Length: 356
Figure 1: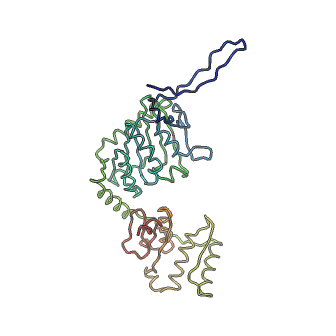
Figure 2: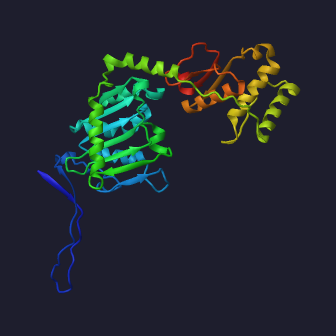
Figure 3: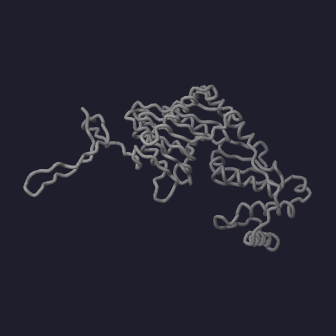
């Protein structure tokens, strides 16, 4: 039995009692009738018509890209994803929709990479658990894939695609200032065909290798670890000078130490006032004036633990400390599987510390 889901118009009369023709009805979808006790509503359609193209810029009046992707998945027959970075929280946002796609017989194919250490192995394993077919590019220098694109196949001919800046991460999907273009097979058939052909060529290429959790998880771990160790954080030969507000805070910290003997102090400052710069400059002062100046001058810095909640913040902070200290080898990250070797100057995430 087939149920027709359509927009119904009310009856209209011409004043003489005769019924006039109703306006045309729109057929939205066809769905198999469910058993009486399992009546499920039809999937919610994307806000943008399937025949139209659109640009999403993360604006206030635009739907978040995550919600549009969820609706696209719910109305697609098969989904192909070409994504540079796969993060666990990003997969979690789409988890139920991807699982439902596979359970109703849809095919989910994902191509990703170990480029710039940003992919998480647990995210890849989660995709496998959802029923996805996954291929990974391990050759860092040869591949350097940085694309972010989705292709939603529909046997009706209303295939759509998203191409833009959003990786499969929570920030990119929910609140990041990301730009993504939505293409339609009706409006831009040539681009859809090019997308489909290019994806197929990648899928068949030798440099993109099939991933299975039990067989390949150790290899993926090694690839991500080697990539992280080989990734050089920026170190700029610049003289960092504090702004007036930062200088005032630094002076107050020094007064607390010298005049009152208080070495445990709390600085509260608004976003954008340069707390990272303050921390780095104050650490340098403590090392060069209060610790052992001779050791600091030779690169033997006092132990340090810097804690934040995101890898991006920790990476930027470590780069700032290296710049302020003029020491490109200073510090180690402890985040997203990256572990220190020396454990002397550690920039750690809350999550990594909690797991220990």
